[in-house]
Image (cartoon, rainbow, N blue to C red; front, side, top):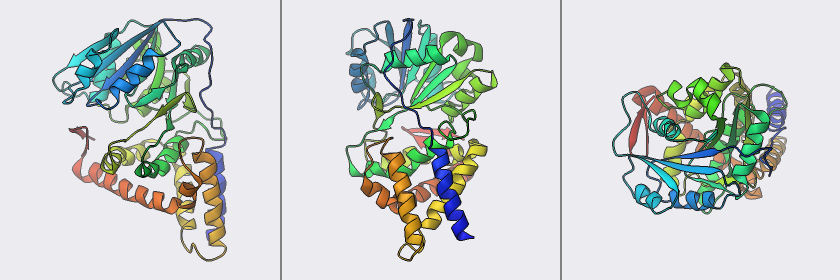
Length: 351
């Protein structure tokens, strides 16, 4: 029975990641006005970098808006040092019922004028052709387009993101062999037309902002729009948690349990895949279980190297990454069930 589980879960892994598609350089059929909105809270380490990258974009009809969400660091001052960047500045907490990111995105929209809206996290690193390509794809698909960026690393601890990265990519259902509608959208980069955002009420439709990316994608699907998800490839990258292991731990634990519970049927396949993966970690030095472990390592390497700066060593030592994932998941579960809140960037968020 255990052999059946291991083989089945390994095959499910290939099903989950069989149709990965990456953002490619494209030239849009026309050049509508674009408002690019960056929600920013305590982003002094990232905001200058993304604004410099946006200034280098090949797409010219571009309005850049940064919403300073009551930052306590130098985010506001850095934004003010850039010419032709509109600053929407909040020096108080969001109104009752609103969470920070949804409040910032909504107010970015209210202060924008573009026909196309792009919401982009401050830690995203777009290449010069990124905006042009995003506009081309949005015009091609209509509806909502989102991107999960390629993970770029500079420090060893960042490699611990491997299981989280694979689970986020696999559980959305966008890249499986089954041609099903996705479970939602990815949060770092979201592209919509102004018309469709206004018709759906966008981020104002779920003010609490918890898992706002998944909820926004589902909102568009429920209203009959298409949702198309891509991987960033060489055009859009990011470093998620560059400030140390503690930041990475807090960042993933803030929504891991909630995310798992919200993904519906697709998460069942991810769960079966992970059960087999963990089962393959048992009896590691006895045959045939060592063979199963090696097969999962090959699978992880084939997928992960396309989605981030992961190496063959990450794949061979995947048991360390997935043990760390278990620790983060149970901490996240404790926060959701017992504390009813998570912390992020100095805020407590009710869940």
